[in-house]
Image (cartoon, rainbow, N blue to C red; front, side):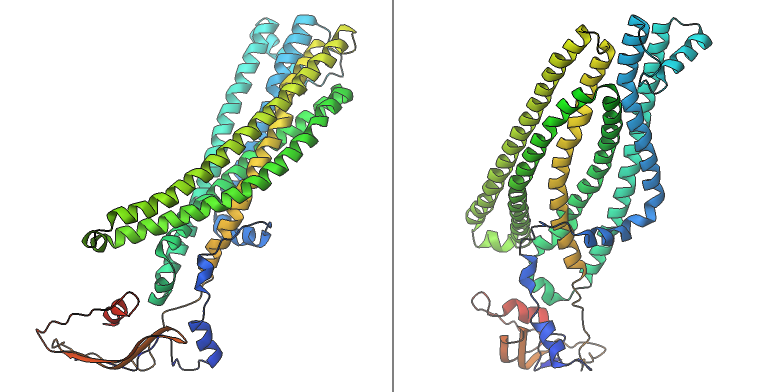
Length: 446
């Protein structure tokens, strides 16, 4: 015989528990799992907590940092070989000793003396070698970074899953399972996009500063013309980020709602089919799906508009360089190769601003995801052993008795009150009642 008397929530009447502890266990804010976390503020504490899972792979991160520095330097050398070495040195032969060639002219001359190739052939070989090294180091930089990030987030998923496994049943009675699934899947994926994107951003910033130094040495005036466009792009990036932040937040809400709706429908599919609710549930799901489509479409339109603006600014800057630089070349104040080098460096100046705008959006999305993940990890509600556990006999005889059963999930909201009945061996009992009357709770208590 299984007997339950005056049962309540599992963590009631624990030895040493104060009334405040009981209230904490009963009156937890489960609704916070359904609340939207905007991630408007950079929370470096969250990033610091994330290091716990990334530090074990610090060797790979250091290797990736070294490789990105090498790759970025090689990216700057490629346009220098074309403009300074080939056009000014080999074709025109008017390169002064102070030219900002970063040693490429001397290296080309060394190739000529070593291989016997003509100067143009040696420059082509040098360009091909630098291009090959750039591709190899870039590949290994990305592979090393992604491998370290994936391994770190794999460990985070493992710990998050293990933590969620130890939450008591009343936790899942109060929190939608679909939203919990979003923590383990979508939110961790947002952190992956952030960490991978940060590596790409660093790879863009190094050529930015190297190119800026070279351009200032060649022509401060032309460099100033290019830099005038950066504030406009920064303002556009700010407004783009502000607009898309709201859309990203709403999109994550709809994705979480779709996961919740899908999980509930699939887990209760038998009941849905018996009740012939397929059409109704399909319409509910499609309503959320259409809302998600609207938000994704708005985000895509904003992104397309922002890309068109930044591309237009780059084209305007290119026109200004050709107009001003062409006049300088004609008047003999600038060499042709230097002007061509400026046109190559335009993307190196503007592209990091575009990438920064994209990464800021990913950063704020990841902040919200990180808050949700650590919210789940910090949830300290545990499974408690009952203060007076009932010892089951070695062999159950099949008789079930509930005697004066009381049960509640929350402190002041009873679910079952003074329920008593006996089911004899072989006897069947139908339990009928409206939604929320405690039918599932009664079965779970068995």
